[in-house]
Image (cartoon, rainbow, N blue to C red; front, side, top):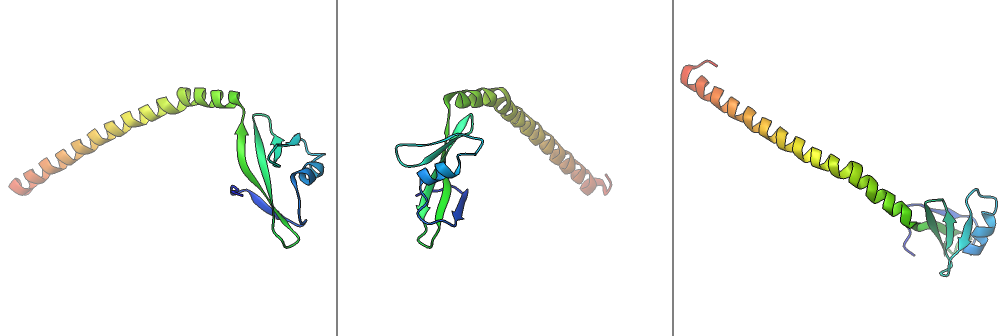
Length: 123
């Protein structure tokens, strides 16, 4: 089972999605079991898909397998990217171009003054 970084070894062997659903019955987010035996926790805009893997030492690894985002979350994310990230990226490209021009100008001034210093021994 490919788990993400969020995983925890719990002190019960052979814990299943059904057991997890029972243990989460007082949890503030609703849960259900999918057709693959994973526990789905509905957190509003997406669902956490929780997997269970028996450790064999009276414990079970419980971890997030993936996130299932709802379609409107994807649409809002794309809109926010278009409004904020893409213009910001273009602005950063403009700033970098400006900075590069200023850097080149500074190098040219340094070279000119070095030439004057070499010719006159003064700046």
